[in-house]
Image (cartoon, rainbow, N blue to C red):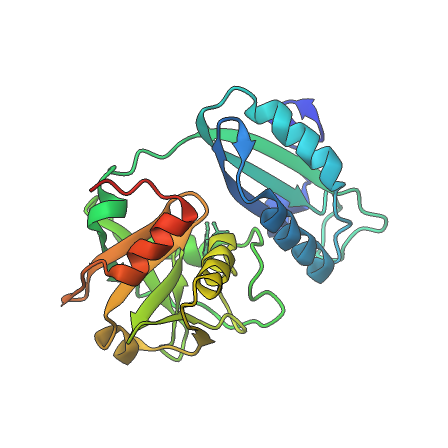
Length: 270
Ligand SMILES: Cc1ncc(COP(=O)(O)O)c(C=O)c1O
């Protein structure tokens, strides 16, 4: 683990990331020593820093540290955290603040290898997502909603939980974004009130547009699930998992899902 470039796993107890979740993070797939979708992750981190008023770390510095940490890793997960740094008691951001960067490398998760091919079972979570346009889209460090939602089940056959906003609108998974296909059209929930604007979500939308698949970012509800032909969840580490079952509804991984899996380079065994 690198903290401000130094090999360490000790963090100051007055770090505002710990005290208030005052910071941001990125989780990147690493293949053959190379962090994937680097530019997109750095762009989201930069947008988050602007929104929170945190001085962004130098991307060159982050890249040098990431490369050093990932060197020699065939497959791993790189986590980059940027906090506002240390501060005194109280919410008021310190001035000047000295942001802190924490880079850590983790083993590749051991999800069943057949999930990308055969699809996964998901559930609907009871924990709602609160609306806050100032935080919507960011990958900030306040993740208690996801922690509570993920604690709702421990059945290993359920791969993910879908989360709704307080009005019952579909938003995303606990650790992923949600797409559905209706009549050949790719649709994903708008994230203006809540949710994380996933890097993989953006990548999927860009690839779909390039491939001539009509896309729509819009409000979606449970009725849309019922009328969907295909459903999938995605993030930067899992890629795309087709959804097979949710709330008694059954789906088959369809041609749009397969095309997008191929486009992002998922290993889909026949
Ligand atoms: C709540 C939430 N939504 C969406 C995502 C997907 O984000 P990304 O595609 O950047 O991995 C994640 C990733 O961990 C997440 O935690």
